Image (cartoon, rainbow, N blue to C red; front, side):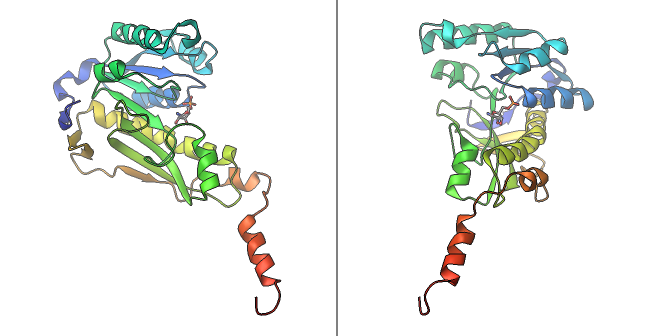
Amino acid sequence: MALTGTLPPLGSLMSMRILVLISGRGSNLAALVEAARAQAWPAQVVGVISNRPQAAGLQWAKNQGLPTQVLDYQSFASREAFDAALLCACVEHRPDLVVLAGFMRVLGEAFVQHFEGRLINIHPSLLPAFTGLHTHRRALQAGVKVAGATVHYVTPSLDHGPVIAQAVVPVLANDTEHSLSDRVLQAEHQLLPMAVGWHLRGELQLHEGCVRHQQGAAQTLFFPDADLTTAMAAPQQPNPIKALHASQASGPPGH
Ligand code: GRF
């Protein structure tokens, strides 16, 4: 991707072809397809490729009449062979944009370079914090007070690349990995279609590695009142900070 400029040309909107890569349940794929339909985008998802045959999102896509394809990475001799096959499969769809929506394989440099500026990923953390796997577990272990999701252009470096938009949700004292990931996922479902829509309408500008919305739209979504019920309903975890305070309060006089 030229790290400066506007993308993509507005004139090509009518023919925008989105290819989505998934590995799992496909809820972000569904959010994208539903937004494209509800908002009558002059663009469509033209295919869904999964690296896992059992990905639930494949069935959802089939039910929607979308072309699907599986490239099971386990059946390839090497990472390079998988990447090459994936690149061929993607190119066949002639995509204007490739969206990694819960795609759990690290892509090689050749793939990333081929789709430079047309490759978008959603990651369930506030990048650059918590790249890689188990983001929610690690966020809880770190004791952060906000979590969220990031949509960004993909560069060869894992979970890095110019940030298009971020969604912020609170982390609650009694959160579990499950309750936090649920809350972040709800935010993801708004964040990804918003960011993809901007890209498709040519509303984004890239300057020295930073993405700006040309009309100044807020590139951060805040969910201060995000559905807290999942956390409230979750089993209470021992609260180490409370325990610390309690032990301090009952400590020996003068302590
Ligand atoms: C999402 O949290 C996404 O950010 C992460 O994996 C999850 C995929 O969920 N990379 P889904 O398959 O879109 O439901």
